[in-house]
Every structure is written in C-alpha cells, then in structure tokens.
Image (cartoon, rainbow, N blue to C red):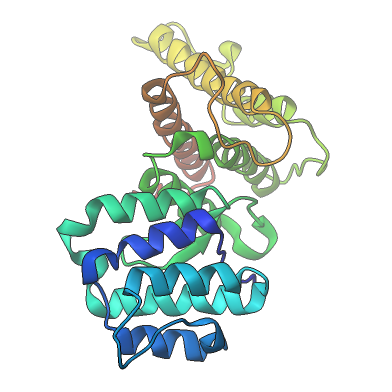
Length: 273
C-alpha cells in the first residue's frame, strides 16, 4: 500500500486545525509523533507549554518529509487524531476541511467526509472491476471544488468506463488504444451512434442530439487534459473558468453513469442507482 502523502501544503492545511489552540491535545500530538518515529523532531517543552500545537505540527511535518514512510505514518496519525476529536463533523472546520481536501487531491488522494484517504487516479479494472468505476464517480462528486486537479482523473474515468464496456461485452480493447478510439467504439457498442437511433420514434432526434453531446463532452475533457501538459496538471487551461470546469466535471460523472447504466441494461442487468 502506498504511503499516505505529506508535503508543505498538506502540512499547512493540517496545522490549521490546531490554530489558536484548538484541535486535539498536546498529548495527542505527542502520541502521533511518537508512533511515527518522529518525536525527536518535536520542539515541544511540556514544562513551558511551548511552542503552540500548530507550530509543533508544522515543525514535525517539515522534518518528516525526508522520510516517506514516517511521513505517511504521521499523516495517518494526525488524521486519526482529528477524526477522534470530531474535527470532520464540526461545521466550524468547513474551510479547513476544504483546504485539506484540495491539498490531498493535488497529489492524487481523496479525503472522504469522514476524514479518510482514498487513492485516486488510475483505475485498475482487473482488481477493482465495476466497483472501482462507481467509487471513482463518487470521488469526482466529492471533490468538485477543485476542478483543476480533477481533469486528469475525469479523463481516466471515461477511458476506463469505455474499456470496461468493451471488455464486458466480449470485445476487449488493446491497452494502448487511444482515448478517442475507446470512446467512439464504446458509444457505438452502446448504440449511441447517430445511425443507431430510429428517427421514426418520437423524441429520437432529441435523444440522438443528447448522445452526441455526451460524446463531445468526453472528447473535450481529453483535449482539456492535454492542454494542462505532461505529468499531473494542477491548474486550469487559461481560457477555462472554475465555474465551467466544475460544470465539465459534473457532466463527466453524468456521461460515465449514462454509459454504465445503458451497458447494464443491454447486458440484462438492473442499472445501479
């Protein structure tokens, strides 16, 4: 299992939960640092009661980044302490939670409403199957406030859904199949293509247009992701506002659900709600 992440942004976001003396106790912090093997970096003087809890967290987190295993353990320990203290249920922490969620998302992790971490990014259909697709859809919904970090995840979700549809239909795609090809073949398999709609049926023209729009959204998400450059792009392309990006991410979840539910129905399964 991958180590839980820790960098300066995450450290700062975690430390905010302890600003002005709030959050878990000094004793809880000592236990978290000790369990992670980082107590030697803790500047706390229990007699003087200094420095503050916020400064302790920042100092130890900074030192921990030199040791990925210890850093991962420290991140988990601090999250455990915050969960036990009820920090993620406290509405007064809404701003801190959003900042922490964004910090984790930028390094490929999703923070749940309960304060637990899930790895996001590549979807392993061989081990996760259909459930992994449903989970990724929920992660996108949960992290909609940071669309710049989600374009890559959204693109990978649509690609994984397309490949799942083809493989589950007995027509697996080559792993190297380009994104556009995967989407086009999956839409054809789902009978979303223009020529597969009976135009004599009332509403058929409108349905065809809706399916065409769904495909355009999928293809444009890939283009937007490419505009972010190589690696894990974090900022939005210059011409895209955050409002538009959030709309796109929401629509990706709708397109993915449309593809999966249609596939379920065609395979004789009850579409999942």
